[in-house]
Length: 327
Image (cartoon, rainbow, N blue to C red):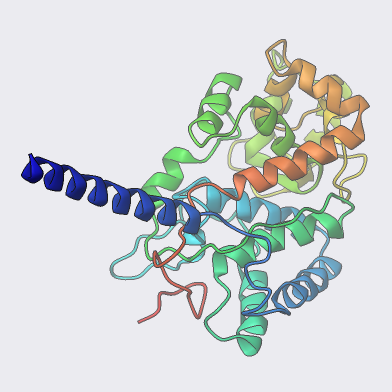
């Protein structure tokens, strides 16, 4: 009887230790907006200065930095894997089809990282800088601010294959987009809110050529005609020519994107599907008439996206240079 009691007590002790360990692991995985308050109190101000300088030099950079964060988080989680250059052992994400000659802002992150390293060597991760840069870029073009949760660490791996299979495509239908987002814990409202980032930035001709020349396309005729001036019909001619995603306020992160969709003026097919008789129509209508609601939901969705599978605790590393691993 005593032996049985001792055995049960030991089992209970082990179970308690496992529970405490699990609680500790779960707790350490939580990000915090005050993560660097003691370790590097001037980190956020330093990053903000770098981002403001970059966006002042080129307004388009704001959209690029928001997109960089998005493309990072959708592959392996928000771990700065997108910043890694190819090596003998790493086939990185920079040259994946959705990123090649498209994703920008790497040098801006490098500059911010170098500035922070002078203050606090080896403390602030590249993954956190990418997340903060997206927030500061939003603010720089009239978009919302939010308390960025911090404490991510940097990945020691990257995956071109995963980037090519996981990132949304400009040709995705609503079901595909919904499934991609749902697979990462993001719901349809998050999908529509985050798509509002296309209120700023530009797209290359090859991404919208079929939409503006296809007579069966759900597009405003005058809008399509306007876009044809910078995007020839011939395949592989002018593929890299750029057009603003929003003609009305191209450098302002606002709700005009949703007004465009209602008028059939979404430049990308993957934009217009959000207002094409499907389940997201009502959210688009809501955001088009309630700018404050869009701003609030965009900030909430950015926080939620930034919390996708972060590396914390002793996982990963704090890279000294964002494009290369520490050795």
